[in-house]
Image (cartoon, rainbow, N blue to C red; front, side, top):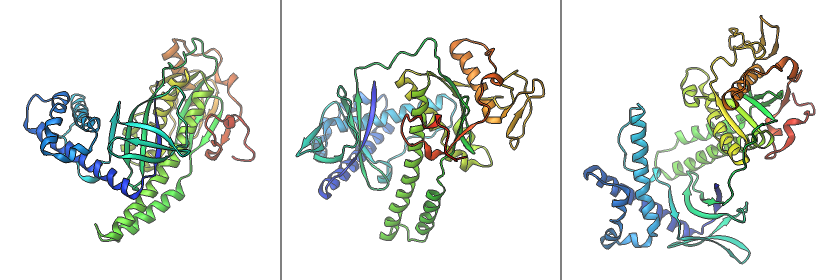
Amino acid sequence: MNYNYRYRLRPSDALEQQLTWTVDTCRQVYNHFLHRLNRTEDTSAYSEQKLLPGLKKWWTDLKDVHSKVLQKVVQRLYDNLSTLRGRKENGYHVGTLKWKAPSEYRSFTYSQSGFKLKNTSGRTKLWLSKLGEIPLTFHRALPEDAEIKTVTVKQEPTGKWYAILGAETPDDPPAKPENPEKCVGIDVGILKYAHDTDGTAVESFDLSDERERLERAQRDLSRKEHGSANWEKQRRIVAERHAELKNKRRDFLHKLSNYYAREYDFVAVEDLDAKGLVELPGNSRNRAGAAWGTFLRMLEYKCEREGTHFVAVNPRGTTKECASCGVSTEKPLWVREHSCPACGFEADRDVNAAWNILSRGITKRLGAGRSESTPVETALPVDTSVSAKRVVETGSPTLKREPSGER
């Protein structure tokens, strides 16, 4: 299995200058081969990589960049081109590849060789060819049998440097159970981030303070003269506020998705078009902030890692359809309770949707029909409301415990 591990680098001032120079040199190489791509026919990543040794004869600065790094720059260009062509084939209106400005190119990658983790005087350091040893915050150990295949060095808009280690382990993911016992359907929302068929409702994570600090920093930035020293200083502050908001949101999503992947044998979710939902008029900011697409992607790969069945189903009609008898009932958005006029089943609107999602997921993945055991007999009588702050540990059973006064 392949994993990515992200660590904060702590370069000295001299090393930071070298890193910045390397990134900018890679950017210039990218633009050079983009220029060739626009004027030369029948090129490929492999044929262009073969030109690199000859390029070093007159572009002598390239001798101070590891050969694999330069090869990955060319590969990056042709990967971008392949992505562009794929979108065009799928009906999207796309333009052409653009030259990279300094602010648009922030990373470089070592592949197969040119890197090593070292323990120097009790401190872990990352050795990179042509650069030397860079201290890093090694907050999380790699698996004992993991082999590092790639190292990507990246500078965030905040100015901080990170190393992303691409590690490969020989172990295959656990086999998925043929007859899963613990099954759950999850309906995501805004007021409550997630409702599941076990009766648990997880509140949305409150990021209002972080948003307020970000908006204040953006207003201060708008008052600075663009390009001045004070403007650059304030731009860093804005970037830090963005990073705070992003990191807190991702931390919450990682822990919640990890919980469902570890606690259940079968997870059914909505196959949401997150980008399309954000583009709809009205409340788009809250829909974007919910990051449903990110949550579902995290949940999918973690289910694969833990050997848990994961299935995404068509969400159309899950709110209107009765989970007990299947009769559809129109409900405006402000109606938060489901009350079936046919069978009398009553439940929270989102809990009813979660049961429908689970039923469709079982049908799609396992081939079973609507369960004879209806939600009327199996659902919890009262939802267990869980504050987002209670999702405090990865894989924690917190969600299963009755909260102490948090409603």
